[in-house]
Length: 106
Image (cartoon, rainbow, N blue to C red; front, side, top):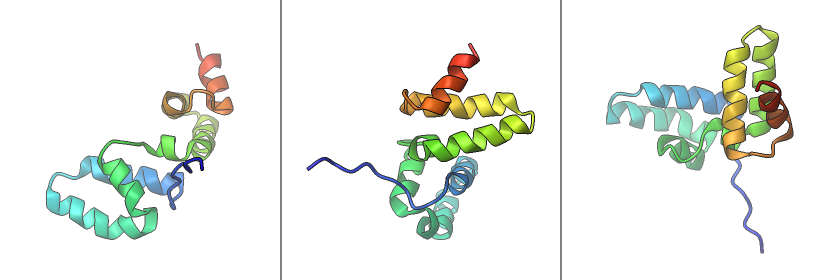
């Protein structure tokens, strides 16, 4: 039986929010607070992956990440969008949308 890949409960936006707050945490107590606050919403496994640097929101939700990047492009934030596409490609090298955007930028 093939191993099913992990998909977090939360949306890309929620995962990005948690990632940002984790990156700002300066103490163990703050991380504990974030676990209580976000763990049930994003899923504890996803939280652990983010905390351990094992996965990024772009790796966990590549399609949603590309939608967020497209929105940034429409807002004139092409550089921010490209960073998201590159993060998707880093883990999902054949993702069609991210692949075409990164290739078209070179």
